[in-house]
Image: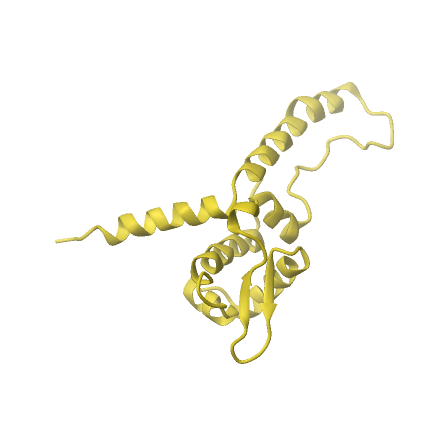
Length: 147
C-alpha cells in the first residue's frame, strides 16, 4: 500500500493547520506556501476534509480554516478515508461468486491480515501524535548548529 499524494498532502496540511491554528484561523494560501503545495490542489483536499467534519472554514477577510475537533480525536484513518474513500487492499475474491481455494487462501491469509494491520495502525495514530512528532523533530533541528 502506498499513501497517495492527496493523503500525504492532506496529512502535511493538517499538521500545519493544527500547529498554526492554536491562536488564529489559518488561510489555505499560507498552508500552501509553507508546505510548497499548490493552493488549488489544497482546495480539493480541504473540500473533502470539510465534508468529513475534520476542518471548518470561516469566510471573510479574517477568515480561514481551523480543526473541527481536537487533534487527539482525529485519527489518520479518518483523514485517509475522507481523502481516499478506502485504504484497504483490493479483495482477491469476488464475494458474489464461488471462488477457488487458492484465491480464498490468499484473501484470508494475506489480504485480510494486511488490511487488519493497516487499519489498526491508522486508527491508533492521531493528528496529535503527528503534531507531537513534528514539533519534536523541529525542536531537535533548531537545537543543532553547524561549524
